[in-house]
Image (tube, rainbow, N blue to C red; front, side, top):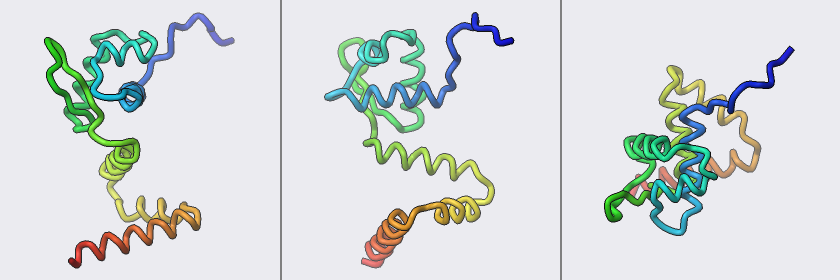
Length: 129
């Protein structure tokens, strides 16, 4: 029998970081931690939002600037850059990079594989200049 009296589900740091980054991407400019907290429905404590933003700053995922006695936070890259950063982080955590990359590429659909080949060709062409 399942106990339905459990408290709220505990989320991992990666999930909380993604929520905070998503909120920042929805801002029209630099946003304060209070704005992020409010945007997330107030479900996270202000100190939790600050901790997450500080971790994201250390990872290079956000930047900050002084805004009075506080800081205003901005994503360091767009959604595509953030996704690429996550992919590199996963790859960096693996011992057999070749096997991981090979598995990734063979799992791509024909259109994505063609696009990847085009992008790699452009990258090589730029380096030759």
